[in-house]
Amino acid sequence: QVPRPIPAMSKKMEGLAAMAAGAKCEKTGMFSRWKPDWEGAAAEYERAATAFRIAKDMPNAVDAFVKASQAHVKMDVGFFQAAKHLESAAFLLRDLKQPSDASTLYERAADLHEQDGRIDAAAEALSKAARAVEQKDTARAAELLLRACSLIDAEEEERILRMGVETFKQASALLLRAKRHKEASEVLRRQSALHERLQQPHGVSRCELSALVVALAGDDFVGAEARYASALTQTAGFAVTDEAAMAERVLNAYTTQSEEDLLACINAHIFNHVENQVATVARSLTLRSAGVPMSRLTPTGAPPAAAASAPPPLDAAGMAEFGEIVPEGELDDDDLT
Image (cartoon, rainbow, N blue to C red; front, side, top):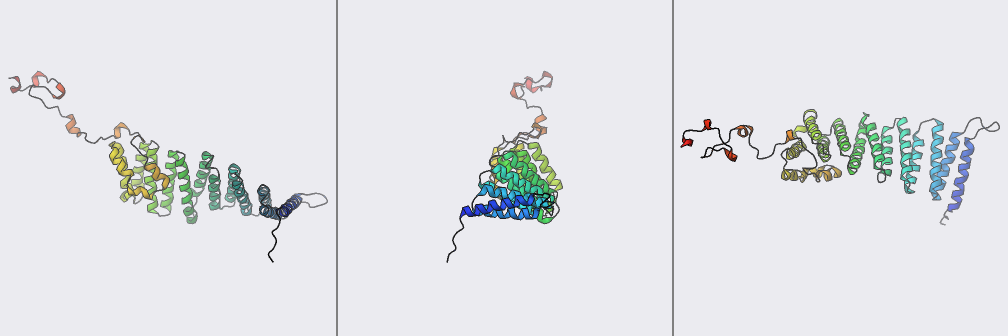
């Protein structure tokens, strides 16, 4: 015999009863207990959350998860379960189309993970918080991701560093979509250092090229050139990579102001191997993207310095080029006849 489904109303009533029982566990008094029973309260709130979810009463389920989290914090036996309950509540809030509240709970969960020393879980919760609001509040999402990147930067454990690569990619992509090129370039530089710590030379070279391209898109030729010079001298092996050669070609296209050379660079196959958002930025580059200081311009076809400083040749009438009159004392005898 197929079991009959449990009516949603009965599960909701079960949830409400469990919430009341949880609240009772929190109370103290002369004729009851001398201190709250936080363990009992947590169990009741967890039971309520399950019942509300079955009843599809998500707002009450969110409330139950938050109260269960608070009870676990009061138990003072570690914050793992407290953080997970907040993440469960945040997940439901996303389904309820309340992204800002969801992000807030994810961030609170990250705080608890960090207090417990679980940096990887904290960074992941911050990433979820950012994803919740990235469509409506890009600035807040960016700050959350930058905080996650900072947590990873301070770590030494290889497992956490490997996981952190994706967080850095998420951060740079979001910043590029928001056209915050300077910050995106800095994140890519930090990601390059992360790859270097993980002994991933291909990741290093791609990040260095990406950082240069993003700096140019943000009208920072001087910064792009300085970063390239630094990578050549301070990043082991970068100078002999295809990415380094491409970076030099791109910079040369700007210093010579050659649209043709720049177009050839940005359509090169090498940009198929960088992150999608970086590739999009690269293929949108023009010479107008970044201003080049006059001292760095070397236009094609310019005469050598020695040739440029030589006196202009004389014509048969004793006139220099452009009709400049040569002083009489400098004319040959033949020119006077």
